[in-house]
Image (tube, rainbow, N blue to C red; front, side, top):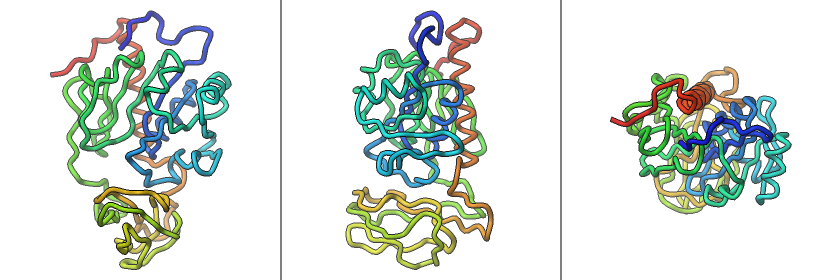
Length: 286
């Protein structure tokens, strides 16, 4: 956490950078934008987005898109990003990585929302005034200022110790856990002509990966589907089926878990603000 006085500099819009463009990162970006930040989302090149209709990632392919009243636009260079942040008319989505985004100047809030379950974490604290890490493996005081636990029943701010390690379980959806996901059988090019929201029958083909057929794991509707034409790694989640019988679509808007993580992220930002102002104890690792 940088030590400049005054968390939000006067005379400019505070800047938040969100690493990741998945559904959780998008809910966080949505919340930060509504809280008054100019928001830039940076796509993780190693993690294709599964729940694309719950995320802002498709702005990079399809152009401007809106989720629950907040617009996102693609940004292809620093000039685009600077204008978007000053005007704050939309969230900016870019393929530029953190090293390039440092050229924007002082970052007020940096959120690592890439949700890399088992990847080694690095210390991002030097790059922003407040740094928040979401998901497994973050240690406040070592990698970030404050972390957010994202396990479904334990979502909340973590200031001491580490967030839980990845456990391989999935929050149930209509009673279905891990079994509702189709994974890449091998590394290769993923091809599909299906669309999110379409109905599928268990065992029916939904695409090919490296030439190998991929079948729907359950009957229901596709809630998530990695974009066709993307190279994927073996074991990557490439499709998700919602088996709910004729209920409200779970592939539209912000998902409840992502929304809860976003709310906890705003709490984490406020905590770091209080810490900087000397109104709360500093986070530390065990």
